[in-house]
Image (tube, rainbow over all chains, first blue to last red; front, top):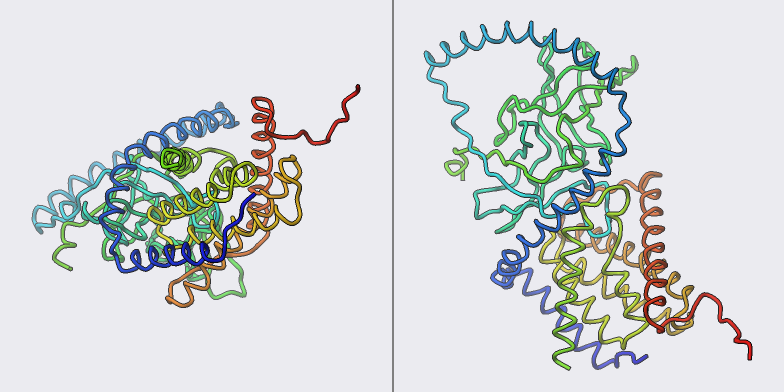
Length: 276
Length: 178
């Protein structure tokens, strides 16, 4: 087996150094754009094949007792029907009030649909950073800090970085993803959710005096500049309340399916251009 | 010569697409397969150093274009891993036996990850970026499983190739009866 001579090593190191230098100063951008626009469609089709496989695996490994689930759901349905009646009357009332006040909050956002082209680093290195790469970027009006939702409107992540044609989305169970959230209880408890090693979501800094319940819904609080209020994050499944501590924390189960994501929408505020 | 390089570039591109698009979405721990590193091990054992070097260089460059890490992270990690694997192969292992393949992928994986994290930490410190990894039990468990899966993939690949061709020696050198 032949090895490289010292002269060659120096030559190749110089080439590598030059490439990194060119990249750092953005001189490779046109080349990068070309490669990415060429590979994105191919990556999408490859990714959808593997997602189908994942879906088959998930269905096989689901060992939920369907009967029990059915009884539970029926009970929930009765509750929801009652709630729905209440909400309908509230909606009507709300509509009238909004018309009076001229609120147009919902119209301030548009949605950019995007497909997932890859997930995580190569070989799942740094698996604590759960992230997706989507095929929309700066050229589509995306920027870091925007909320990413699934087809049911649940937040599944937040844009961390953008390139011209693609973006990195930290999933809500990633340590890097922090969201301003509020719990849908009487006090509308506010806090910050943060992923826990790619496994669950933790909501911290909740005062001890506030009453939390398992099953309470957690929504986006609207305190972040580019994330609207009321997007569903998850449901509380565990509460950590120690009498000797200043704060309590809640563990949240995400409502969106974070394992099987192929198409997402990015919530883009129409007022972001005015802010820039 | 140029046709060979072009063919290799095409193959690298295919492996790159497979790794980014297909492998990354697989369930269980199958997404921890590092196809590029596996190919490097096989090429290092069977070809002249130039071919795996082209592979490491091109694949590293493409990954750096695609990912959002500090520039050069994949390029340097793959190249340094390749140089160290070559050093190990030349000085400590016999060519083309299953054990040398398994040892190479084991050390290659280890070296690649250490350099990847080291590069990330050092440059993030210099560039004042935020990096936060927790090196807890779960982290080491995942890394161990990833190592196991890559070793298994190399072993399967070795048997498939030795079944198809006659390039590799089996685990033990069998004495032929005359």
